[in-house]
Length: 117
Image (cartoon, rainbow, N blue to C red):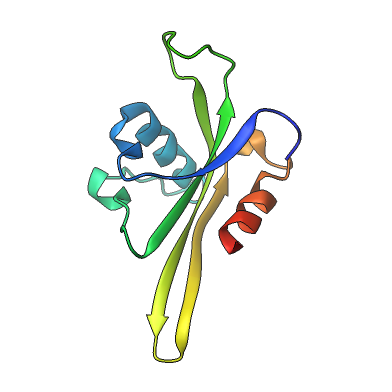
């Protein structure tokens, strides 16, 4: 990525319980369908503990921990689903999206490299 304070982490089951993170995630996914935005339900973003890995890319806002306001902004995401079939296991990558303000910085490339690992 471009050397700024970005980091990628695997989503935990309760990450979307924070309303501001949920709203940021909804906004990112709606960038995939700008002509047909939709409102997500909390149930639609629940993680399947065994078959889904969701990676989130954060940008540090420079706020000190413990101060008011969010310290991080969600700028990208992707999901990997593990599928087990008679012919062997394989993965399906879905919803690779980087916020339009943060594109062309290598974030999408790094997301794909991490999800393939």
